[in-house]
Amino acid sequence: MRCPYCDHKSSKVIDSRSAGTSIRRRRECLRCQSRFTTYEQVRGTSLFVIKKDTRREEFNRTKLLTGIRKACEKRPLHSGAVDKLVDDIEADLHHLGKTEVASSVIGDMVMEKLRKLDHIAYIRFASVYRDFSDLNMLKTEVDSLSKGKEGTGRQGSQLPLLPKQEPAQTVRN
Image (cartoon, rainbow, N blue to C red; front, top):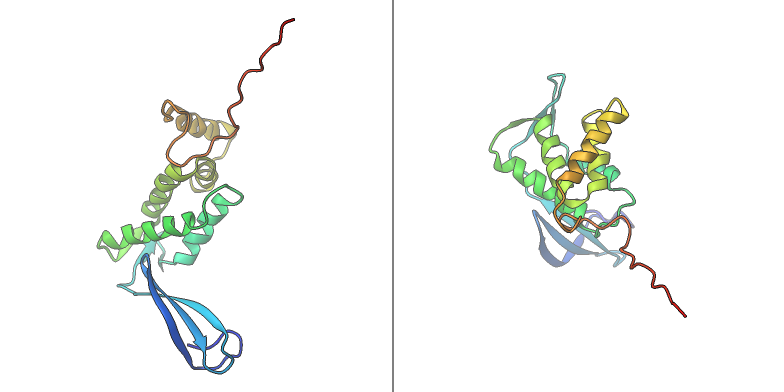
């Protein structure tokens, strides 16, 4: 492993830990003593995505992560939520046991998980994924999301849009 600071080719592993579907290794360069972290993933069988136009391309985790991050941009989610969501989707895809998966299957998995994670991110992703062509399609999706809410008005880790305010007390003299 080359040092990202001095490009020296030797380093030693200081610490190794499991990090979900990967292994996190803390390393130290043998030349400059700088420390850096690497993540290693076991590469299973190649997974190909069948696109809408019937093209096939190799599954790209980074591409999936980028799309979900765009949908979750500026949302109050805890730091590892998006990475965990992508890890879960990737694990689910490998558990299918197929070498080829339609892009619509991946899109549906993302929609399902985003719906539970954050409603605004879900709507953002849905507007691109489902290619809403007018405001009525978007309104229909928002309405169906609103009807799915339970008594608390929130679902899962969904944060409220506005804090609850108590009615003002009137003082009578």
